[in-house]
Amino acid sequence: MKEKIFLSSPHMSDEGYEMEYIKEAFDTNWIAPLGENVNKFESEFAEKVGSKSAAALSSGTAAIHMALKAAGVGEGDIVFCQSLTFSASANPILYQNATPVFIDSDEETWNMCPRALEEAFEKYPNVKAVIIVHLYGLSANMDEIVELCKKHSVVLIEDAAESLGSKYKGQQTGTFGDYGIFSFNGNKIITTSGGGMLVSNKIEKVEKVKFWSTQSRDQAKHYEHSEIGYNYRLSNVLAGIGRGQLRVLEDRVKKKTEIYEYYKDHLKNIEGIGFMPENDWDEPNYWLSAITLEGKIRPLDVIEALEKENIEARPLWKPMHLQPIFEQYDYVGGNVAETLFKNGICLPSDTKMMKKEIEKVVKAIKNY
Ligand SMILES: *Cc1c(COP(=O)(O)O)cnc(C)c1O
Image 1: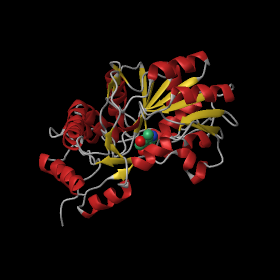
Image 2: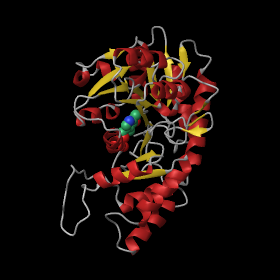
Image 3: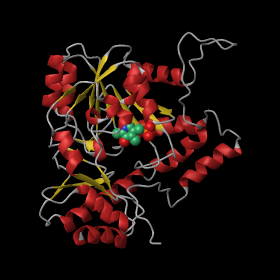
């Protein structure tokens, strides 16, 4: 059996940083609930991305849920959400009994199209919040999106689950909006096996998120609750993994960039193959390298051919407005997201890949 080549799998530091922090938690028996690793992971993370405060949570999905709650989104409210994304961007809108309206992407960024957003504002002037995504580590068009959200006094939530380490005009993604969320799921650029982070400059709101996430326990000797609670905090052991992983983030970005550049150098001369958009403002983390195919070659056939070589590849995210679960909700835009879904492929971008494995992927595509 040939070694499988993965899209993106967990990669612990060579130095063993994660084990040092986990050991601290074990030595003090303080593996749970909270503790030093959680506090330090939050402060180190906030400093790394350049935000005033952070809350370590059990997942990126939980972080989006808490961001919506902090934004005051509730029953019947309208929330705009980028359509081309993973379903976890949109599900928490329904947890809050709010109504999603999906927005198309543009070709320049693959992320939310500012013109479609403007059109949506005209149609739904009472919208409560906007969720944009930085897919595959590519930044959305932040200048225009931030300006539009300010103009309409609407809360902006950045789903930066895939873009930790990416910069837009030198500033970390996830720090432009009112709230930014990150994921440490097993396939993300750094991982705690499962986990997430919410960042914001609104310190009191982040404190409130920590309160809600630990079952909303009011100040009292007995258990007193005046608000609905959630069990959403990250454990002290997993926060230890996160602290270790954070120390190798730059190495991971560097390696993912090299992988992308290798694909680009070796595939760019093939007719019909397109690459992710490149913008002056953008310093992506290249979480996943993606290509687009034009003409007769069908992405699914290429993905199957790679599978036979034990190489994992996948289509881009299927847009939310095309998902059965979200069918009944409105959509604003054209067919950019849909076309990207039909033509795109995510290629293996695993930071543990050796040169010869990246070569093997390129060869398999060329042979096909
Ligand atoms: C992974 C991901 C999430 C969800 O993060 P989890 O930690 O898995 O809950 C949300 N949005 C996007 C775009 C993602 O890729």
